[in-house]
Structures are given as structure tokens and as C-alpha cells.
Picture: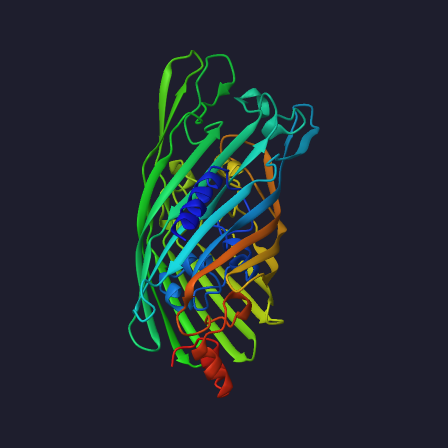
Length: 465
């Protein structure tokens, strides 16, 4: 088993080299990880269904999973992003165009492991290597679109192709403790790994060329940057069929992003950009009052307004984002002893309310409505596969940018995601089935079978007494 786990970890590290893509997400964060958690729109603060979901929003949730598990999953994301712009010509006519970003079909992978060292121990340990999100654009130059034209509006700026890529990976070692039969608490540090590049570097002052249009520097030559923070949370069983949960992720400190570049004469330049990731507050409720059915609601607050870069005002060189609120609804139903089906919906407010910062063209985090579906098939008592699909409905915003006066700019974005998971159970259960009631996710145990025989459905589903 140790050799198998080491191979899975190595595979996840290799997959982690692939770029994350803009998807249906509140800002830079993906709503969930894999086909199980993602199929329920990321609902997991009070009702974990697999190892990835248990590790994603609330560190206490791993204590409610009910079994030892490795879950490797992710998504193939197909973003559909457009930028449009228009400006008046000197002859009184209007120049306008609309251009699509060529983002390809990127892979966003994640890996989660949850285990008890001793079945009777109150401690549960977990480790996640999570692709939190990121995003980017790849707009070609377009002479008919002013914001992407070789020479920008009124010949003041050289613009042309626009590219950006940001990858956010997080390592989150986690431990939970069963305080009472009804209360689980959890805590753990976070280690963040970011890769970023921008061309042009809209956050930096352009090259001033006498008698010629100004040109922007590039910010593509850099190294990986590290960061970190902490997480804490709890899950409490109000009744045998009703759980509530709370998770907190601190603001994530990041190294200063530093780029090697050159000016228009070839002289070496260094660009610095300071960024932090927002503090996240998650609340969740889960209800299992109907046999085989679990319903969950998660609410989250992302404090972008008080971060560096994202919350920094446009006048100070930032993106000028507002804080965002998200609500997710999810359902999981055990169709047969081997097959579970699920669905979810998420709505989030838009942190990007205007295109005033030219930099925001490279960060089109504007999708607000997402639906998802998924299924899990138990192949054996130790292995299950899950598939899902998520669609982020098209949203658009319009505005202007300070550096290109008299030009109207529009952003549009939608996305489609193919979700997948492989779940491997090992070392037996913890004496109960998972709290989410997913029989296809774990084999029945003698304790669970006895509880079910007595008609105690809530206990058979894994609710602490």
C-alpha cells in the first residue's frame, strides 16, 4: 500500500505541472475539486463525500469521512473568454471588434489522502495537494479590436496580443480531533505554490519613448513563488440527521512576485508585484432526513477587498476587486448499492465589477452561476470511479480603462468542465459508513449493518450519536 500511495503522490506532482484554467469560480478559486466534490458544486463544509471534498473547505470534515481513502481527481476545463472594445475614430466613425482567448483545454488536478492511524483513535490525518484555481487569457493581436490592435487608441500605446497565466497549488496537511460524539474540530497549515506570468505587464509603468507610442514591459521571466497560512474548522451534529460546519482559511501570504525583463533599449529591468490570497469563511449545513439522500448548503465569503493586488485600488496599481460571497447547493442520492448520483448549483457575486484597470483584461473572473452533475460507480469494495460535468453560465461586464481613454471595453466568459475521480479505500472503515450516506463510496461495516438492522438509519449513515 505504501508503494501504491507513493506512486499516486508522484503522479499528482507530475499533473500539477499543467496550468490551471479560468473556470466557474469566485475570483481565482475553483468551487470544488474532482467529480465528487465538484459534482455537488463544492458543498462539503458539513458533509464530506470523498477525501478531496473533506480537505477542501473545512479541516474538521476529514473526521467525518468514515473511512481511509485516497482520492485523485480533477477537471478538464474548456473556458470560453472574449474581449471586445470600441472607440471613435478621428473621422467620426467607430472602430470595434471582438476577440476570443485561445486557452485550449487545460487539466486541473488534485490529490487527497485521509486516514486514521488507529481505528479507535479520536485523531484523523489528511494531506491534500489541491489545485485551488488560477486562470489566464491568451488573446491574439487583432487590428480590428482597439484593445488588441498593434497600436492602441489614438496611437498612444502599443498593445497587441495579451497573455496571462496564474497557477495556484496548495499543500494542506490536516488533523482533526473527535472532541465528543457530536463535535469534531480540525486545524492545519497551508503551503502555497504559485506560477505567474503576464505579457504585457499592465501593472508596471510603460516605456516612455519620445515621439513614439508607449510600450509595456513583459513579466514572463520568473520562478515559482511560495506562500502559506493556516486553516481551522469544526463540524457539529445537531441531531442524528442534521450537521453544521464552519471552516476558516487565513489570508495567504505570498512571496513578492519578481520578474526579469528589459526596456525598449534592451536594458535590464526588474518588476515586483505584491499579492496575497483572501481569507475565506465557510459555513455549511447537511441534512440526511430521507433514506439514501443527503442535502447540503455551503456559504462562503472571500475577503478580496483586504488583499494585496486583488483588493488594491486601481489608482494604486491594483485590480480593485470587491469581496465576494458564494452560496452552493448540493444533493447526493444513493441510487443502488453500487451507484450514487449527485447534482449542485453555485452562485457567487462578481468581484470584478468594472474593466477600469487594464490589468483586469488578464483576470476575467466574472462567471457567477454554475450547475454540476455527477455519478460514482463502486467497481470493488476498495475502488470507485466518479465522473461529472459542470457548466459556468456566460456572464459579461463592460467599462473603460484609465490608460486607454474614450475606449469602451467588454469581457465575456463561460466555461465547461469534465470532472473525474478515482477513489481507493484502504485499511477498512472506522466502524461506520460515511456521513454523506454514500454506500458506493465505502463497504458496509458490521457496526453499520447492525445499526441498519435495528432501523437506526441515521447511525447507519455515519452520524455520531
